[in-house]
Length: 176
Image 1 (cartoon, rainbow, N blue to C red):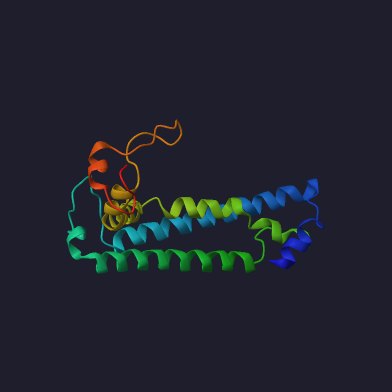
Image 2: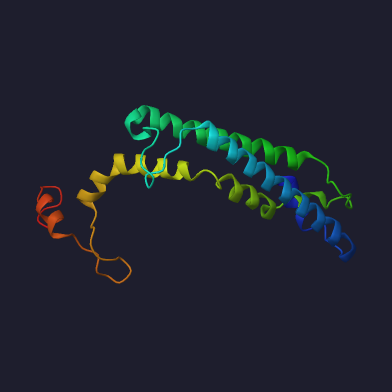
């Protein structure tokens, strides 16, 4: 990383280099997009699906919190490992279209990596739904009890609902 930071401002892209650098960025963006979509599709078939709008078809909600947490952790771990090794491979590979020395650091940009991030989640709506479900199961009661549920913080009308006021009469918060 230090090598990249120190060299990024010393190497300038000349107009004749711009086409080769741009073409490499396009190719790597396509590679990231295809890899992300392919991995997303594999995960779609590998892990239990969970779509609360269609009903809990596979019974994911009934499998218990330990299974649910394990399912989410394994999915996240595999996504992060695949992303790391894909980025590492592309960062250490030579440009597909030859470029002038020093410009290879410009090729694998954040732009091309964004395509991987976008495509990895095409078929992973279930992961988002699973995370929402687990967070609701773990945190809803706490948040519903201690955080105001009515109004908006933006317009200054955030306040406790009448139902919350009845529950909150405790020594910790006092009468709200």
